[in-house]
Amino acid sequence: MTETATSTAISGCAALAAPALSNKEAEVTARLFAALADPARVKIVNLLATSREPVCVCNLTTPLGLAQPTVSHHMKKLVEAGLLEREQRGKWAFFSLNHEAVSKLSGLIDLEGGS
Amino acid sequence: MTETATSTAISGCAALAAPALSNKEAEVTARLFAALADPARVKIVNLLATSREPVCVCNLTTPLGLAQPTVSHHMKKLVEAGLLEREQRGKWAFFSLNHEAVSKLSGLIDLEGGS
DNA sequence: TCGATACATCGATAACGGTCGATACATCGA
DNA sequence: TCGATGTATCGACCGTTATCGATGTATCGA
Image (cartoon, rainbow over all chains, first blue to last red; front, side):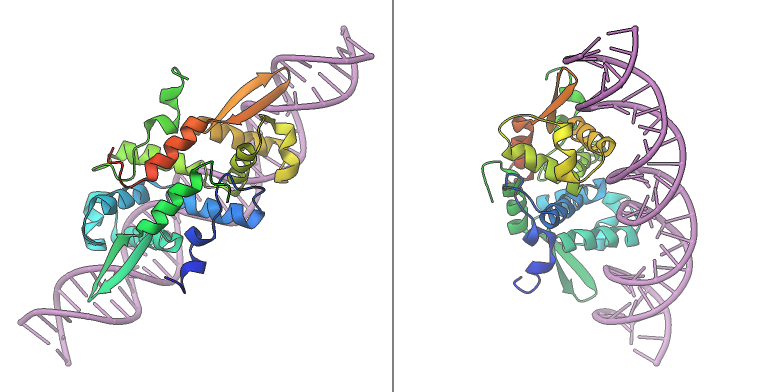
């Protein structure tokens, strides 16, 4: 994850209690929260959090009630945010939660963490 | 906060690791994250988190670089989400962080919390 | 090689949301 | 009472985004 770390929102965001957020820090942090600012993406993360194994797109369209291109659109947003990881297995694309990113997101909100 | 608790997003949301989020739960949770999905609102929460005293709108327009109606718009969103509390002092409106809501938000993301 | 399957991308459309000027309302001082 | 000040609301504009059908691409089985 070293080479892609700088391109995801989870790697460039700042804690809410950090002193004097810059414009760029605020923008990156906002983009991270925006990744979870959609009901479909909240459901996706919820489904992945409660599933022990990675899940492919074809197993998400039915529980989400969305068309396949729409699901792919949401997966891309979550991967770009750094919250999900994508793994290609043959013609299937399996997605799993990036637990490190999720715990980092949780830590962002803690008011004690000054940076 | 008892009578307003049911109208804010922070009171109706569900943890990301809760089993089988309903449509309504996903929507409320998404609306909560949407409250922080804007750079200006991230900055507002950051300013309030680093300020020991409540802050009025007139002291936010300059550091945010936004017009007064825009700042009021953002404050309303944050109050509706339950993250901020509003207190009227004469002709000034003072806002402060709802620490309980913020810590609850942090707990939402923890994957261990199954409900 | 060919059809079927899984997924991503493209283009279009509709809805949402941030922004600001103008304005209304409330409060305070003179 | 009257003007000044602080906020909220309104209306409009515009960029963003969610959604889907159509299409392209890659993989697998026959």
